[in-house]
Image (cartoon, rainbow, N blue to C red; front, side, top):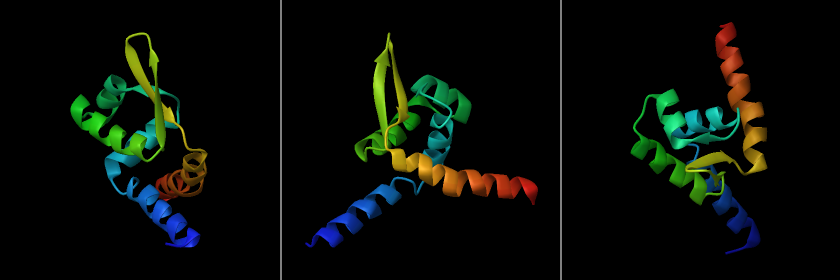
Length: 100
């Protein structure tokens, strides 16, 4: 596999992680700052196991990271490309939808 093919494969996997609406909602929430699973579950009205499963996918792709704060594990946006994508695509799309 050539270097270009490796890069394209990596990008494909990166974008697959964004291909679920729940993961996009998680990313939107994490753009506001670190959050624990419990808070994300309450905000998105979803079970903690379901949120954890989606966070695991995002973490395995290096999109989010986590750190322990006391007894809680808080998740945050780790990959700087996510913030660029958020500003370019998601934030713009959401504001466009509000204007329509």
